[in-house]
Length: 353
Image (tube, rainbow, N blue to C red; front, top):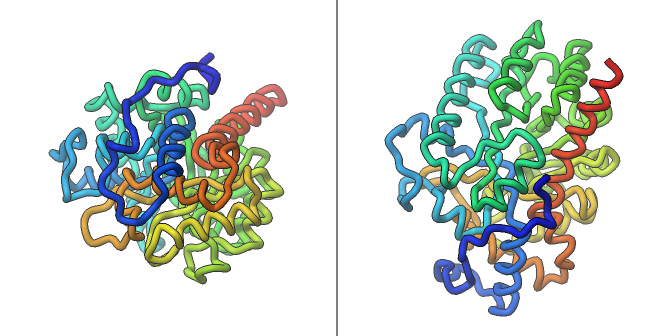
């Protein structure tokens, strides 16, 4: 079984290989950050590249291109070892039928699986927590499919089981009829079945009351794959301290985004949000979910315009006094834990059945 004690495959990235800094960081802290990421790489909770590539099917992500902010060279330069590929689509809005949302989601899954097949030396489809460490040790980026929109599940759990069979491991309830203002009886069935299948629930954009209900109903940890602290910026997509406290109680994970509208316009502002989430959700409840994968024009904090900026963010946290053990939880350990805990819950549910 591959795990953190296994010798990681080095990708040969050092501080001298990074692009010229957009923000000042101490050289010593940057060297420490690069060394730490070589052992505990970033498990990023949100990237929308699949949607972008669905619209631009001939784009080659093995070479850097200013037309999109994510490619394999910049993922490697940033020390990204695992990526959750978002499969949410605009048709997941409430004014689109569930059938259309399902069809569009299946198209997204097909695009994602094609991406894995096209770049087998860099991307590895991940289905379990063990795949996280296995991919890292083989010099590949573990690739998890999801979230998919919860509104694709209407009156049956069959779609959820089909998603699981296709490799999906994350479901987003936001906007689903069964999780709008209250968690309905069918919503409770969805939570139980997701727990049984080891599919994580992503509470991004859920109303605070519903998010707390979902966190309490799930026997497995829940995540928020891209968010920031509402206490620092009352953006509607940011998470409240009440929800962060519920996540801490449920051993969940809030992953902080790199979006100027939600965090502020600098790397230091993102670090402020990470400080706050860590203080409320605890060191075991904070992660990273940058929401890269977009084309030009999407506002990004200075110093974090693409995945290659991760080492500078980690250096900033080290300079702020974060212990290396807690930085390792932020980048890698917390994501691995929620995946393992979801699998443990799944096995326990199988025994009960």
